Amino acid sequence: MAPARIVVLISGTGSNLAALLEAQRSDAEASAGSAQERGSYEIVGVVADRDAAGLAHAAEAGIPTSVVRLKDHADRAAWDDALAREVSALAPDLVVLAGFMKLIGAPLLTAHPGRIINTHPALLPSFPGAHGVRDALAHGVKVTGASVIEVDPGVDTGRILAQRAVDVLDGDTEESLHERIKAVEREMLVEVVRERACSLAR
Image (cartoon, rainbow, N blue to C red):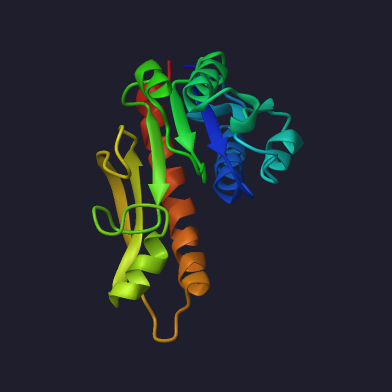
């Protein structure tokens, strides 16, 4: 059975991408090279919207990379079309947003319905948007966390696939809380991708 084909979209340092790559290597080693039992997924491409530092993780692993910059296109609609073409050319079974800092447009959503997932540093539906950690601290909650969702046209409104809680500690800053959330987020993302990939493997 062929592993599911995964395309990862990034904008930053690629810590989630690194976790997915490490899990892919671990799964491949555990399968001892058996064609019948190799890892459930294979990252076949990494696409960024800028010259992201995280592209180095993919390059080190020999995975094709590309950059689709908004400034290189006439408008947002043209960029949405270009991103959808770039991702679709890799024939993914699943698209993973791993710190991708732009909303996904209709062309990509239409091309891969129900097969795009994303993480968010809060327990959705609480604190959606770009500042989930800051908003949780501002509201004084004692527990926040991380979510993995199926991407839809809204802002963090997609179907919740997994969640995990993280306690807010006395004296937490946005940075300290976010670091603990990101550690949980990475573990949970790997688990969800493995699970979804198993159902998609051909």
